[in-house]
Each structure stands twice: as C-alpha cells, then as structure tokens.
Image 1 (spheres, rainbow, N blue to C red):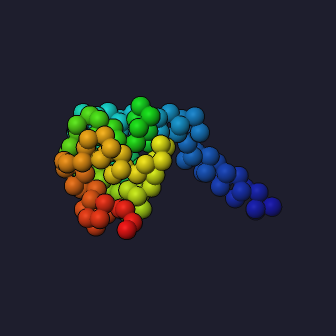
Image 2 (image 1 turned 90 degrees about the vertical axis):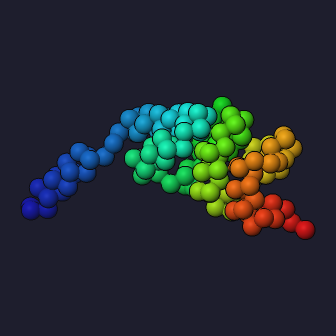
Image 3 (image 1 turned 30 degrees about the horizontal axis):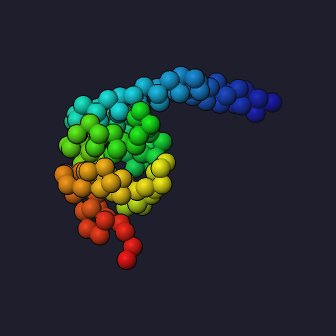
Length: 137
C-alpha cells in the first residue's frame, strides 16, 4: 500500500518539471532564429551568449540548423560575417567540416567554388582540417 503514494508523488514531480513538447519546439525555433540572426549580423558576442544561456554546444546542433536553406557557415560567407564564421568554424569538429552538405559539396569546396577561397573563415576551416583542405590525395 505504501508503493501507491510514492508512485503518485514521483509522477507529480516528474510531470511538474517536464516541458510540454509544443513549448519546447517553439523555444527551439526561437533559438535557431536567434542564432541565424546573430550569424547574419556578424555578432559573435551575442551568438556566444545565446549558446551559453541555452547550454548548447554548436557542434551538437550545427547539422540541424539551416538559415534560409544554408548551413551556418554558408550563411556567414554570404553575409560576409567573417568574425562569426570564424567562431563557428573553430567550434566544429573536423568530421563536421568535412561532411558534404545538401548539394554534395563540403563547406571548403563550396567556398572555393563560390569565390570565398581567401578570408578568415576559409583560413579557420583549413586550419581545423590541418591545412590540407580536407581533400584526399
């Protein structure tokens, strides 16, 4: 008989601290929108603060974030947001930097094909990839 009150108390405790799915989804959309805005406006400090406030590591969410159909790094390139692009590149693993995106090109191949072969973002990516550019010989 003592098990029933304990089970009820545990259920109440768990249900009071869990976040309903629609509220969490709305928070995720707002977080992604903020991240995209900060990248587009080249505001590295606000981007860093937003990630820290939400206890989010960029390398854990990078693949799931698209800004106007582009990855964060492509968005930084297109917005000429060198500071935030460099910040993003330095936070990603070499595996993530070497993965082909939706069009089949890696970020470095896309950057070079679109005239972004020089600059701080490309330098940071090449540095993370060990200077080889991520291409096999």
